[in-house]
Length: 521
Image 1 (cartoon, rainbow, N blue to C red):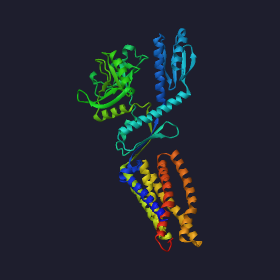
Image 2 (image 1 turned 30 degrees about the vertical axis):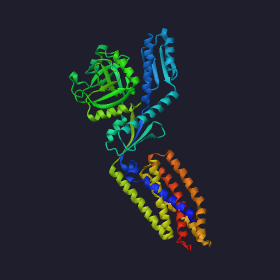
Image 3 (image 1 turned 180 degrees about the vertical axis):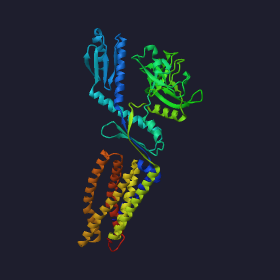
Image 4 (image 1 turned 30 degrees about the horizontal axis):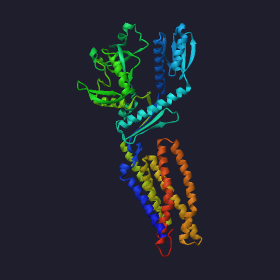
């Protein structure tokens, strides 16, 4: 008996020591959620139609180029909708040849529909549309996560949100520059290097004057800044550039803030192997022409290509040091596949978080003290047993959360208080059963053993039912609900251990040391 009791005591001490080690020091080991530490809570929606439109426009441009290579000049070919390509002006004598080209390029992803002589509409297949929407959300999630990680935020949360499948939850504990963080997260960050056909010009009309105001189908007008034309600082100028970018930010290997030859902030970037090959071929065949460096559909600079450039480039402009650092971060993390809109924003100040912690600690301590007084008054010395069991329950609960890296939130503190009540409830069941056994003229040791044995299945049954509820709360709940479910889960598991094992061991230890068995209950 004494040998078994010794092992039980050693087990309890080991568990308590492990839990205490896990949470020491508390300010470093216990992770606080947004509502306790302060920071920003954002819910964003990915505009998946943008990603579909980019895909459709790219396919339309490829169709136009392939038709042009074999001498088929189309009147128009472009995106009529995010999932539709509209083609007009197919020569009647080349119609069959065009349909063959279109089938080779688009048959896998689009349905073709004839709209009259020389006119076709290509509609994206539903399966392809659904796949592209899911991929755009997944890519946006990964890109935002990379950007948030580079911000240096401790313990950020970036996760899918809602049931529509196009929302993302971002929580940034400890962030003070909320607006700066929002701009970095939301910026599309699309870098394109395109050949300049004309410009810069002070107005769109001047730029297109030689072309009768018409933008060629394979070109586009992009705005930018260039004070060399005599324009006022910050004025807008216009460039006519090729629509298709031979090199984009997807070909980047790295980007970093730097200083240009005029000692002004700039951004240097380097390409990966495939990007370096494409950029080298492109610059080598266009020496002497201007190259527009376009970020988020704005020309930042348009230098002359002096010679073949293989793997590096630089973006100059009217940057501040902070802007150059932020843009380099955005480029390193990759471009977003679609634009984002903010559906919800909540900011929690550090002082409010500290107030929440004080209120939570006060509530927990008050509840524990009230419960302890009740147990001591009603169950006398046996109440000490219940208080020790509940205290160890809370210690194990904190230790488990620290070991798995769970975040403590304000609803989690509510879970702590609920754990205190559940721990006491288990002890009340056990103590009342022991009193009944003592009333049937059993010995003290036999009454204690019978009390724990007969209540064990009841405690196990109620805790398993509660664990199932906690699992559903965690699976389907939002952030605060998940915080409560996490605390509840670990509280239930530790409560079974403390109410049954720890409490019984305390009783056995006390009774073993007494010659005449008696119990204050």
